[in-house]
Image 1 (cartoon, one colour):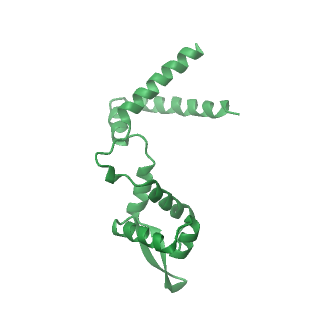
Image 2 (cartoon, rainbow, N blue to C red):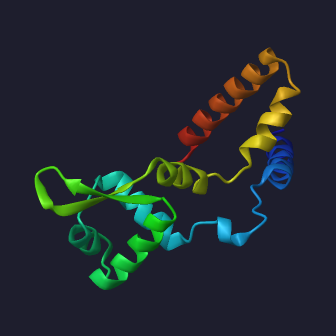
Image 3 (tube, rainbow, N blue to C red):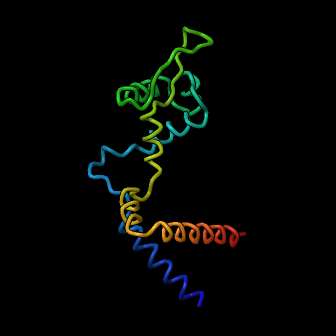
Length: 144
């Protein structure tokens, strides 16, 4: 029974992934791993000066400035005056930068999932989520 369940689950998981994997029509839409890491770091650390950010991500200040300039042009980052010292600027995520960071973490296409979920009744959607949540909790309990 357990082996049949595991095989059925894997088949359904693979089918879900194939049907709903996030596909980008243009690879330029995807953030590079280095950009994701930089945005992630800022999201965790908060606004930083260019010097602080360069030290945090272990990049030469000139390289970092080039990266930040590019991301400011794309409206993913902004430079704001430091309220504690007007001579300094703080680098921070824009709303678009925060949205892009969240989007970069999505493995599955949320629109595809929402469309499939819309074909279920509200009760079916809730039951699916409840059972899946329980299953994930059990998975977490099975690892040492």
